[in-house]
Length: 353
Length: 255
Image 1 (cartoon, chains in turn brown, blue):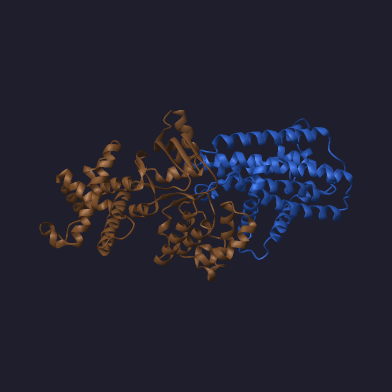
Image 2: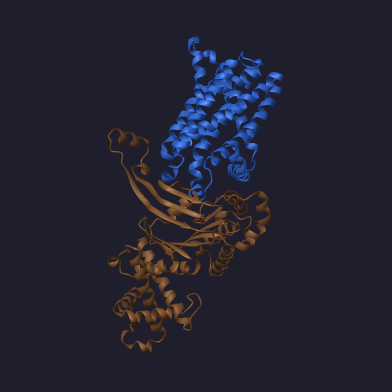
């Protein structure tokens, strides 16, 4: 029995006249038959299932329908078509800091939020001190919520939400909360929860994070399901997609193409790491001002020119390496990864515009 | 729904607490205002209308108080309910909680206020030489039904308010009108005899009437009045539930 099952989930948003107009315009528009509702499918025919203990990553550019899908899974929204089924208690951390009451104190907000998340009073009394300690807000308990800095707000929200021992944990961009020290602390807390066999869903713009934490991955694009499968395969294909200049991008049409793109990206990435570690072996294309996208493109092109044997050779080399254990040229990988993440962030900002 | 409420008991009490805290935030007198403001309201009406309508009318102050007691609860509760969905939109778009809880907690907060005012009302009745007896117990009926009636109106209004913010302005005008047609500060007999029955079409008036019969005239009202109240309450609750049920999942798109 899967822990979460989505069957052909489609979610339609309504936009158009209905949000802006008041009663008068509504009546006029109805009478003149110009009332106009636009439909917008945030998600279309999403089908996947995850088993207990799985960690699912959801990736996709802005507006892909990730957050909407999460809302359907948590039950905030009812899918327009299809069905969502989930087993057990769901704890969702969506856009953490919103929904607090600015006029109440930190203490009051903590209890209110705890109540909203379905904890009991006894549980909250028992855990209150832990929550405040984890959020590092001991000195601010009686401050008005609006007096907190935005980092503090997110920290508090994270601390309350992460106290649960849920069956399903849903995280929407929450691992980027607070300063570096808190980020590390929260990542550890999440890993701790996940280690107890909890089923998780993580939405993240950092592909690296998905690779690290997830075993399955769902890739959405403009509401459509591009791929669902093992995290490394999907993440590779998605990274390859991100590193392609916008006008040349195309989504993999089927499983075979997905696997192919994923493999090519893997090999390209591997060459890239080598290239950085041993620039003396690659004298002809060191260009300090090369962008990450251009670099990946160049490497992908190299991979395309390789003979199957050469490719196999590099593949074997990769398979011999534990992906999570740092290989010998650690420093370089990290730098490359950081650069990759920066590039993705930039991509994400560009999309937002 | 009762079962649902049971499982959300903690949340419910936190919400009521929140509504109270926010209502009396930065006031020196705090909850005392629940008692003072209806009193002032009664006194103002008394000062103005005593000489016009009340000269030869016994217990005119209780007559007015019965009106403002019901009317102020009705106003506070329905207006609060109307805004409760919009006010809590940031919460229910992020966390999966039954939206009706916000509405009911608001009603309960207004209900507690009403309870305080009711105590003052009884004290006034005593001071005015009115007696309490077994018939006073029949007041439990309108006190319970009024809450249900208000929730029904609140359900309807809150749903409409999500779709059309105009409702807020229209409703405040409606409330003003209701204030005048509910015979709060004037006796019904200033209206020609043949029109006096029309008052019974106004549910708020029927509730007021009930209080007046019990406290001033000193007996339990007729079955007819009970039935009118029952009919009004059930009808408005059904309408409220129907509208709410129908649009429950649509709210997200409009907030």
